[in-house]
Length: 265
Image 1 (cartoon, rainbow, N blue to C red):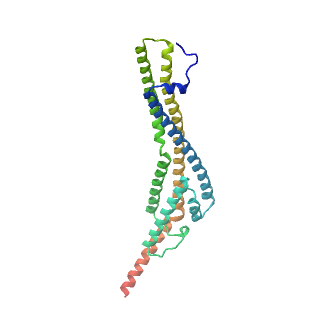
Image 2 (image 1 turned 90 degrees about the horizontal axis):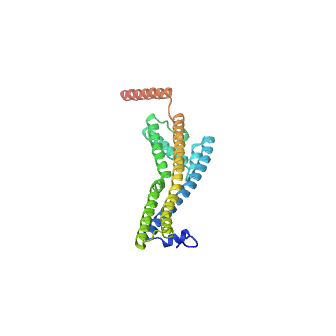
Image 3 (image 1 turned 45 degrees about the vertical axis):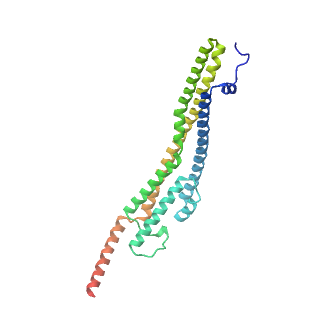
């Protein structure tokens, strides 16, 4: 006998088998976790973009690296600011190493410190590349869960549907009747699992592609900034070919003078 009013979704779920309820519970877990990740990543990327804009404004207008460094320390989410902090520290570290090699007392500000060699610049570039990889990993964290949700939940839902249809046909065999009224509730109950699986998978796939594109854009901007920072370091903290040749000549003359002085003694 066909009921006067069709059963609602909640009633179908409540009357479903234990296996169907377990499937829906798993899909619910995937869906809630995915939405939490999607919302968190969306707001983090938005905040990071705003902080990047603020940092680039200060970086492009200010010529004082110490001032930029102090401002960058206040930006917690900006990947460009974190890259600058890494580059600044490496730049300062290599300058300190140059000072020690030349046996000079420290204390010179970064903007007028010791000149760096080409090898030092390569070291700074390597540190920046490692920092870029770290930032990409930080912004890509937990995105794999969205990919897993998008690829797995439709099959979990399909499993629930197949199980529900099997349960319905078994009930038909036990009751010995195949009327629409006896089959339809079981089929509807089974199809809820497929709908739930698709409901969890579709937003996860959309946001996974969206957030992956955001990571790609951030990576491109970080690569561009690394090139700008290396150019800045080469321009302001390395010797030109003429200066390098003159410095070598002065060192040779200084060495000869010391040798002559020793012989005279």
